[in-house]
Image 1 (cartoon, rainbow, N blue to C red):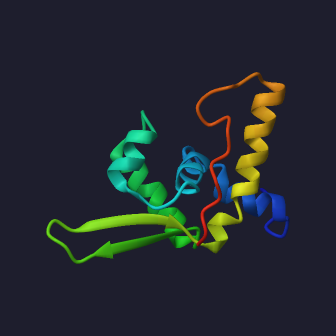
Image 2: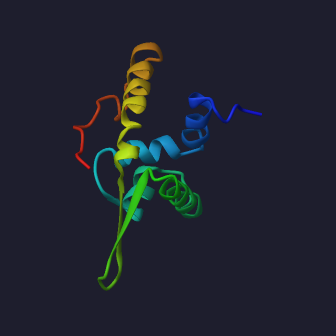
Length: 115
């Protein structure tokens, strides 16, 4: 059983869920709607995306904003706690490019978004 007092273990519990880091990566570019996230994360099921977003919201990493419009509009954005994960993603981007030869569309870091 992982050590609940270990900062690495605690962080891994949050970010190691399938799709989690990719959701954070996409939200690091700014606010996004559910359908936009679903499109950018090709292959994720709506149910899985919904569960991951809810989990990240419960952890205080993602903020869900609902707008009273017809039809209702919902946007997701990173909180300050979520933005603190962006350097981890940037490090992964650098590692993947330098050590794994990955040069895909996310090889360049987007401009940082203010909370």
